[in-house]
Length: 299
Image 1 (cartoon, rainbow, N blue to C red):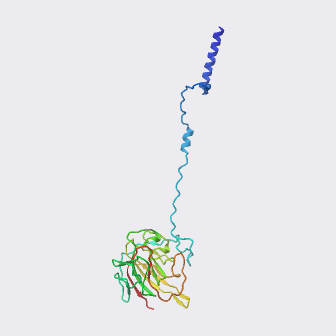
Image 2 (tube, helix red, strand yellow; image 1 turned 60 degrees about the vertical axis):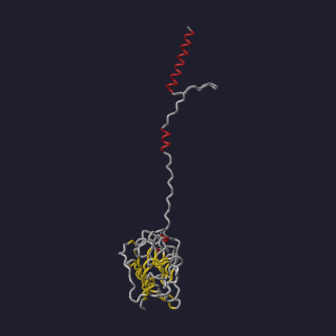
Image 3 (cartoon, rainbow, N blue to C red; image 1 turned 120 degrees about the vertical axis):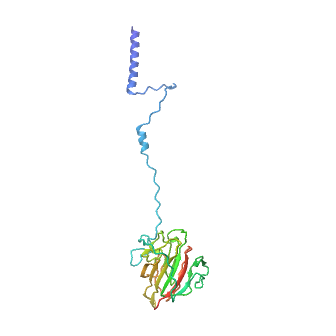
């Protein structure tokens, strides 16, 4: 009888331990060292915490935005009478207008024909290329043999038909009065640059009132009235005055030039004489010129 009772007590105790383990989720005792654990391990299910960690991973860092190349400069002198720097890219862009269809102007009575497309007799640089009634630079700038003071100048020009480059690197040249005062030549059709350096600007000083530029490869006209500066001894009596008509549209009206035009600065007036040549700039772009004539103005 005593043996039977002990057996019942032992069995009852084991059953209780097993029941408590199931109800409380307690781990079973680990096997003794050296014993082989034959228990099949079930992989732990993914928890909600793991999912949250995946969802909250930081996003891939965005690439820094590429800053556009500045149109001009902010470290140049202030243009007298304005709040703008020379070649200031923040200066307002001239309004774009559409010019009327191209019309070539034949030289009037009393005009001096400087270039009619046939030869370079009136020009110093004989290395410029002659083709299809136009001349274009190959090496060095161009300069008229004759010199002029107060004049009316007509000139036709065309930037390359296939545009290359941007800003000042696209169809760049210039027309210099007396070799010192530049009216800028540039392909400004859908091509922004600093406003005092766009087509028809009085370079480095005054943007045109409007952008009347035609498309690449199309012929364009400048009709320029130029009054030379006047001196008394070394003293400036009156500055150079320029009116520019670009493709039939007035873009400068009797503008008083501040001094000889220059890059990133304002030139100072010095008496270089009452006349000077008409220069055409070579800026590395094959800009074409044709139908150039000058009419001296009566004193």
